[in-house]
Amino acid sequence: MRPVVINPKTRKELKSVSDLLKKLNISSHVLTEEEAEDFGMSVLMSEVDRSKKVSRNTIMRKLKS
Image 1 (cartoon, rainbow, N blue to C red):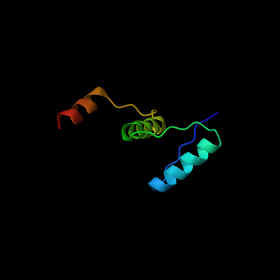
Image 2: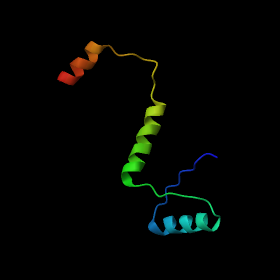
Image 3: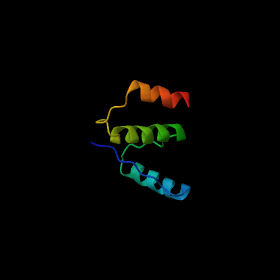
Image 4: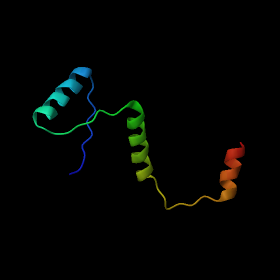
């Protein structure tokens, strides 16, 4: 199966969702802040346009400024 990401707005919502999943015998995992950032970064990286190329010179100029 595919995972589902849920972002509860409050601790109360988190507890309710967690309790429901437990009752339904569905495994769940609460992400740490770092794990959530990593997940967000991976989503952004998968959506990036890789069709355009940038020259090495352009990159080096940006790094120097």
